[in-house]
Every structure is written in structure tokens, then in C-alpha cells.
Length: 366
Ligand SMILES: [Zn+2]
Image (cartoon, rainbow, N blue to C red):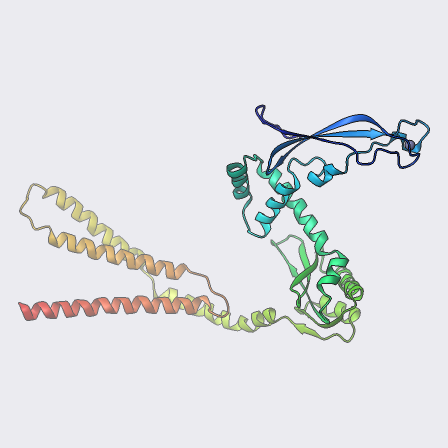
């Protein structure tokens, strides 16, 4: 849909002419046949481009039906875009180098540059930016330049499943330069499908003229067989991360068992909280009833009020600990739970000690 410019927008006018006015086929001077208007946001303000289009007037020339546009237009903006290259690059850079969200980009464009775009439009430009970056990353000349000083490459392949039931994205990465070489969503992880990616990886290494020192992946059958076939003699190592996960599995099972037992032991938070709240409610009624008695000492009620609040705080802390499921194989959740419960116990012990000390003191003084 064309962009709807507000009526009061002030445009800078720029007229572009075709650089070479002579017909590339017959050499006659071409004549203007049409104008194309292109309004576009730039960081220097809104710009109104008027492109003078030309064609060859010679009706017998094969170029007669062709229209030629000024090449300079593409240096400012791509066809149908509403933002110039400067804004386009700014959006892509904020998204991918600074990890800004789309609404954040939209607001900043509006606040600082008075460029009003919808989230949809920004997302569309981000996709195009992504496609351009991917194309550039895969450009064979640039790749050869990047790998000029590298003697051997280390390759890895892995499948990522963004959500259960969705197709898996297979990614081939090179580890000496930490680069994603290419990625493809495969409908199945069959040997034939995965093989295509491995063939492509082989072609890339051949084109670069590099030896593969080692392959790394998990032990999916399709990887094992495919790599053995496409890269005979190249060592294939098990990925450390997957290795770690498999190693940790029995530990995590034991940990989860320990968690269940701790939860079973530390229970009954609800009745404790209810008791405190019931007492509070009782006191409220009492204090309302006895409000006429101004000489009544307020202390005992405040003291138990304070104690009740402490008990409730402890309950909140313990509930948080019991519901916390974070932590990986290196610091499993059960271990974290045990540490945290230990801290609560120490804190309770400190309170008891303080109370004993206080009582003893009072005893001596009194
Ligand atoms: Zn011509």
C-alpha cells in the first residue's frame, strides 16, 4: 500500500535525469516519455524525487518500447521503498547490532527524526536488511577474503527446533572464524535431506581451497553417515555441549528426586500464614472495640503485628525457593534449593539466638 503522507509535509525537491541520453542500441538521442514521482524519508528530511524517464523515439529500434530510468535513483532509495538507504541501514543496525525491538525503533524514528512508520513497515525493512546481510555473508569473494589467513576450517552442524512440531532449522557453522555459513529449514531430518547440506559444506570448503580439520555435531545418525561419506577421513568429534548434557542427565535425575523430598519436608506454609492473618483480623476487631480506651498500652498489639509480618515474609521467601526451577547441570535446581533453605534456617537460628540473648539481658537488668 502506498504511504499516506500528511498534507502539511514539506519535501525537498530533487529532479533526476537519465545519465546517458543516447540509445544503447541505435545511438539516437532519447526523448522524455514519462515522469516518476517517488516520495521518501531521509535523515535530511522528506524528499520528493522526480525521475525523468526516457525512451528511444526511433520506432524501428528494438529499444523503442523500453523505458530508461535515472540510475541515481537507486543510490538514494530502492523502488517502492518509503525510506532512503540511510534510514534503512539505521533500522537494520539498531535491530541487529543493538538488539532494539521494533516498537523501540518506531518510537525513536518518530521522536528524533519525525519519521512515522508502522511496526509492519519496519518489520518488512528488517526482513529485507536480513536478506541483504545473508547474501553478503555468503558472497564467495568476501568469504575468500575472510578466510585468506586460515589454513584449516572446523565445521559444525546442528538442528534447532524453535517450537515443538515446527520444522527444524539446520545450521552449518565454521568455528575458527565463528561464522554461520548457511542455514536451512528442513522438513525432515532424513539422511537424504541432511546430506544436501553436507554436500553444500563440502563445495564451500573446496571453493575456499581449505582442509577440514574436524567436524563437530551431536550423534544423529544422519550426521554420522553423511559426514563419513562427504568428508572421508575427517575426524568427527562429539559436541562438548551435548556430551555435557548427556553426562549430566543422571545427576539431574537425582537432583530432581532430592527436590521432591525437600518439598515434601518443607510444607504447611498456608496454615502458618492463615494463623497470622486470623490473629491480625481478631486484633483489628478488638482495637476497634477498645478504641474509646485511650489509656490502653498499644505495645503488645504492635509487637505481635511486627512478629506476624516477619513470619509472613519468611513464608514468601520459602515459597519462592520451593517454586524456583532455574539452574542447569552445573548448578542444578535441587542444589540451589538446598542452599537457599539452608540460608533460611541460618537466618531463623540467628533470630532465636538474638531473642535468647535479649531475654538474658533483660533478666540481668531486671
Ligand atoms: Zn534506439
